[in-house]
Image 1: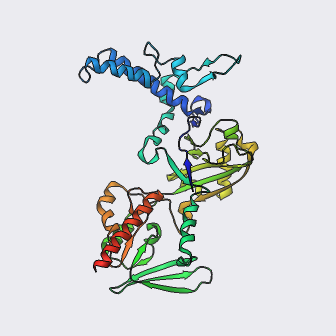
Image 2: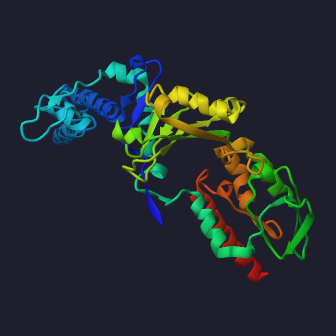
Length: 387
């Protein structure tokens, strides 16, 4: 079963340790204020006839109408405290019912503060095609996908097997491996091989393939990455902060806090992704013991959610680049590497073909791995039946 995976929540936070006295800001505030102020600036340019070369008189009128609507500008084409801005960024006192207090408009953050804080740098990621709603996840976690394959394939899968070498000739492919439970050295022979071993591992194995494929296997480095997950006594982000799914971003080393997209309003414990680090920060953090990483995530995360200190129960940390059978999070292609090696990586080499996220244009995503495998077995089937 699938359920929505919420990438974007306007109540989530954007945080900088150096701005706003280190206090996190609601995403909806920064987003509304950034677009509101820039819309006002563009409206001034239109009214000053600075865009005559690009827009006709009629076009300018439509442009002003769109800026007023999309930027929450008032009748004077200004982005300032009032009903228009509050309708986007929210109120200091929300509208109520009956004889509840009257609504109070909120005060936008100044353009200079919004720009200099650079909190806007994390607003655009969910506009990217690969991150747009609506996205889905398996109920119970991403591991359920692998479990489903395992259930359907049953004894076809051999577990606890570490591949040591891949040999091939005109007749077939032989895989040499070790049973990690018994230590027994074994081999398996087949007519063809679809190899999904990450290149970070495959590049270290004795693999009998041609020069072009071997060069491609050796050409792609893998991204270091660390995640920290934490269990909390209650779902305070929902109860206290009205955050249901989505991600808060920060310029601290933890980079982000991701909120669960399931079991909303549950009164029991809840789990957060407390940190998701890449690059140099991930390498540095992974030198720490796992529980030290968890402690760091709690300390830094408390600057965004002060509830951490009281509500934290336990945590876990994984560094992908230190997991022995992966040694990285995903293949780090560059445009030049793809131009030189990608087709060679995907080509059928004798009786071997590769598949995985590294053999796709959607690297780092399971979707890329699935599409790669479908393409590989389709091509291999055509090649084998023709042969």
